[in-house]
Image 1 (spheres, rainbow, N blue to C red):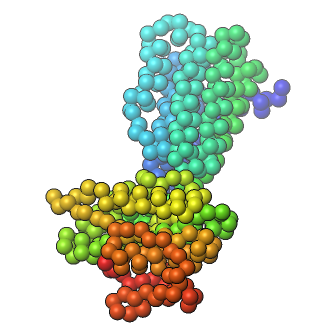
Image 2 (image 1 turned 180 degrees about the vertical axis):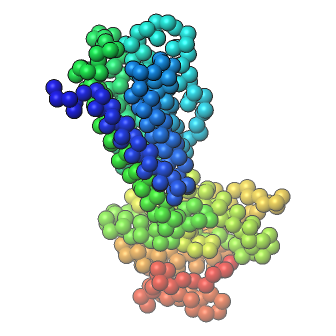
Image 3 (image 1 turned 120 degrees about the vertical axis):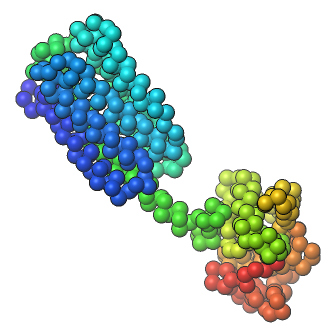
Length: 420
């Protein structure tokens, strides 16, 4: 077997990859302080690099230096990788979790002569500890994938899951096919093959770390463009886009509702805008908690929200939306000791009456909303064709065009803000 396949060559390459990744992550950390996981992964790569350097001198240094500290550094590096994935998944890191692995390794060397004397026993102990931290990294990566569905997070699960399996194989192999501590570095054996796998995994890790950081950053900017900053629900742009995409699939049944908080301006004038903001947040949180799969909810502007319900008949959609209305009426909203009672007027339009065009659906829901307000508020009204003949007036002026006059939706025309 050629020399380039020796364990020394593989370990040297692994150390160089760790060093390069440590340098790259250090550079990224300087400009990406918002992503805390980068700092953990950076520290992990530096620890693993230090570990490889110390292990390189294992034959010419005392056992407590090259072997004890070198392996402790590598173990700590793996612990920091797992902690980094926990932080990436927005989980809390228990510092005891970081200390237990290196602690077990150091104590086993100090307390047991058999560990100091038996090279294969040391391999089994280290492999068990590193495999445990690798499983932690895989589970934490999976938790982040479930939360955000970042493609590279799932890739990390596969990489670290496989690495845990390969690393744990060292335990039965060391027991069944023990190695000689003096000659194993010069031979090609099972340890060489598994060390090569570790080298390949460290190479893939460098790719995964950097892509995860990029995907998280892109997702952050995307959410900023899609989410309303006050209520944390979809903003108008995203709501229009998502609803339009669902309508393009030509569902058999669907309804669009416009929900408007009654007398919201009075709340702002009486208790201040902070109270109004609080009302909007509680309202949005409540409605969002009631949503089912396939529904789209977003803030259209001011105190006005949109809700798209697909896959339900008009009667079913109306019943669901009216349940939300009664739930809003029952909400206990408090601000600085004041109880704020809030109701909502709702206009609903189904594709059976207004068609699949988003503008027409919004126009129908808007007309129905006007009827709800005109008839006393705190009610839900359903659009029907007779409403096409109505013109909507606000403040004594015609502010929106009816369907009979090719009304423009709020994509381009907005009603006057501050409507009660």
